[in-house]
Image 1 (cartoon, rainbow, N blue to C red):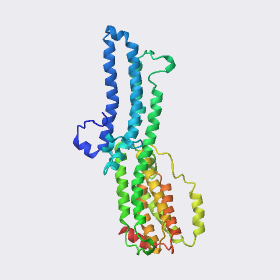
Image 2 (spheres, helix red, strand yellow):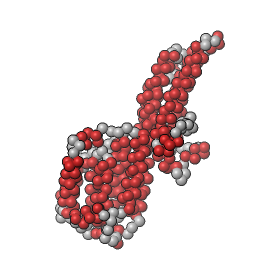
Image 3 (cartoon, rainbow, N blue to C red):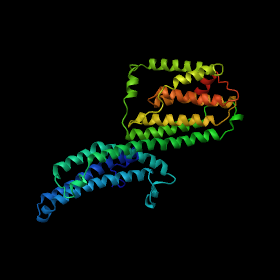
Image 4 (tube, rainbow, N blue to C red):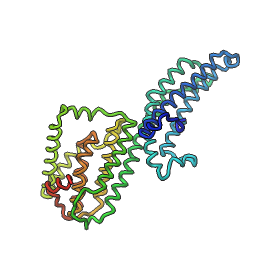
Length: 368
């Protein structure tokens, strides 16, 4: 039923396909379960002679049935997410367009797991307690037929794993793009930078697509709202902060070659910034985690290359351009700043002549 839900609005399905799939799946799980319980309740209420004698058996069957159903559903989630080997009948979920479909599906399954744990199982438990109490024919030594606590733990764990799996899938796709960027050119013979490289636009486009997915499925976090309220809505304050940050960045760039020791000392203090934290069920947390992982990959790719002065300056230009859009996207600006700096440091350490671009030239190229 989860794979064959009917969508009433084609426009909604096209504009918000993941949201439509999630809501339809929620309805299929909860309403479908309640319909089954209602059918069995009507059956027991008929007081037919044979059914009266089998009442305790039926109650056990109903409870066991839901226990088995949710366990099987968990296995199905693993199968659909690609975290478990699939049979031939599921091969249509993979292929040329499988990765894109699968990534969105994994996100839907993650949030659906939260719904099952927090809403569906408690509601079904209430109905079973109200209308299907008794049973016990299976023997007390076997324990209760339906154990909601166990089901909740299963889907709590499944949701966390699926959310992490989504971030890894999206990170892997973006990292492939970044790897191509670093392995394609001959950095030792790189020409003087004239503009921001097109990979930056592709990177931001991927993040935009990820943002579109998480906005359909996940709620907003509170941290970005709190940070924005600190400025009391003042645009001037925001701009002044940005100018101050830009001055600090330029100053650090100008001294990059002559103060290498201070740079490494600063890195030791910056390590106190908590870079990787647990992924939460919020839009900002998922996007921030993916950006962090991608920047970490970018740093590692830079360490594998050797740059001439122009190649290093191209990296400096690209990273500087990324600062503003990335900081507008994520919730952990300090960590993003640190990781962006780490990419530049990695490139400078692998550069034959690490002389950075002058701030006016850097600004002109970025504005172009």
